[in-house]
Length: 105
Image (cartoon, rainbow, N blue to C red):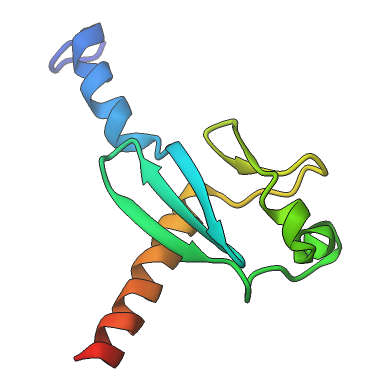
């Protein structure tokens, strides 16, 4: 027998937004930079030039191929199957933003 609060669908709807990070919009900016908007309302610019390591990311070094990403399964993905987790992209964006702010301060 279990006791406690019974959760209703409306309780899950609110928590789901906080639990599953998704990219809702992405725009190519140039070089290896992408502007991202997350379902949390946060927006970040990520520079992926240092993250293109490994066989699956090799084709992305071609800038014309790099800019051909799409939003698929809640993140940016390329036609060869390469992708980055939205959580990684958000953290990378925060770290890069902090680095820029330190340099400019």
